Image (cartoon, rainbow over all chains, first blue to last red; front, side, top):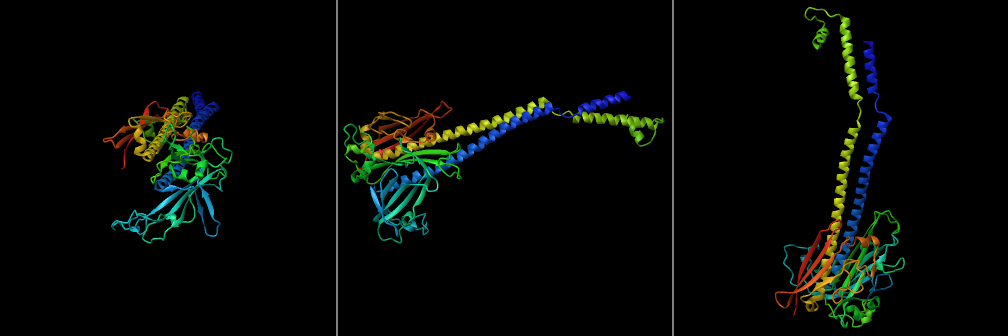
Length: 298
Length: 202
């Protein structure tokens, strides 16, 4: 009886000895492997999420900027070679049309405040004023200007300014474009890093605007829309013939804490957009007859 | 047996026979040991390798599910990106059509132009008389970041055709823009088409 009991106790001891080191190690290994897989997946998901957020951010910012420029170009009467800006307490400044600066000459159309849904005096029930749409005296200039970002070296910011150069007397019943009455430049999009000129030197500003004109006297392809060279942008007659404005933006979205454009990580997202938009008014039937002002030679 | 034990628990007799207290104690103790041993065996059984493997397989299935979900979303993102680029091309060419107008398009009536996309380093464009600039991103005249350039329009052989056809009357032109492409990881050719009517304004 004693022997049976001892055996039972021994068997019990053997069974209740718990896990051996090998079992523990194997268990830990298996758990580790599966945890590593899950952690890797989670890390990938988080990274993808960050990248996706930045991509959407860049895409939305670039799209809003391009749409805004498109709308203004469509509304513009012409493109200007230069304008003089007079600000209170500041010396007057001349801005010239370049690949970084777009100067649009905008007509002013009458719109009754009661018919403007974005105006505070909008009245949905009021009848449409028959004067809506007539051109008022004066004009204003819209300037899209690419400037270096003071807070983030290596990046640029696109700003928009409305210069009321020859605005007629302000009509109290007219709903003017809000920016016309604003003095400070409006920030349109930040984080612009390109596109650059081919083989551009370090620190060169991006070339975001290109100007396209109907070429009158190419012997081979008359009427083709060709890109104007930079030298043509000071030529008033060449600029008057511009039919299309090309907009290229390369936007970067990075960590908000990153101090410089160079401190990039794998999570940074860059995005490029390209658009060409035509002027609705007038447009000129042909651009400059001088062949040497176009990019394409044939 | 349980009946007997029960009987002794309540301290009574069964079938008129008296079972001595020592025997009862012995029987009780044996039963307790057996129960304890059974419980110990059950408790100390631990986890077998098979169980570990099963759990590993289950977590593997879960991980692959997550991976599949992840790759699917990446592909969807790629597809959306390509669709956005296609929309961009459509808008650009629609704008171009409006800017060109009836008078400039009319000589190309009945013709289909094949336009070129980004990454094309063609020195002589396919249709130089018509639109000689690359669509999407200008990889020829401008320098983009490598990261941006690779995002431009997926890794595809995109094709853009611009067909100008006769309208219902001679002063109407029908312009049809067709963009065809295939997404990454897919051989299927996708196509988007947009038609515009251009009229001569007297």
